Image (cartoon, rainbow, N blue to C red):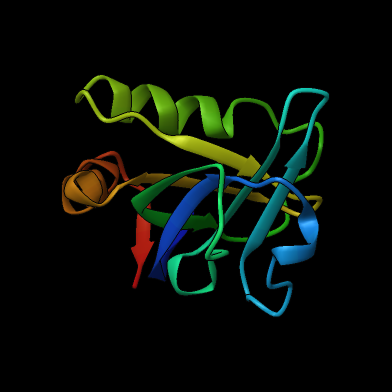
Length: 122
């Protein structure tokens, strides 16, 4: 499986409303529940005003369109990395999956995935 490195820093945050989100950002993942409004976006596009904010994430994009019947892609990546004490934050779109690791674990995550026969594209 091919995994592409996303060459930017990411922020995960909670916002009070969606009006302050920069939707021109190439990567913008918005979540809404009855408890919160959350956002994963490029750090340089993160809203100035957030309720909570966690910077220092790096991202990966699983290349290709994943069929909905395909099982365990994120689970497999998560297990591989968690065995090395690296946690992930996963996000799914209609076509594929994305996952994020803290920046201090980024290089190690790439090495571990490459050792497990994932092709890492920079």
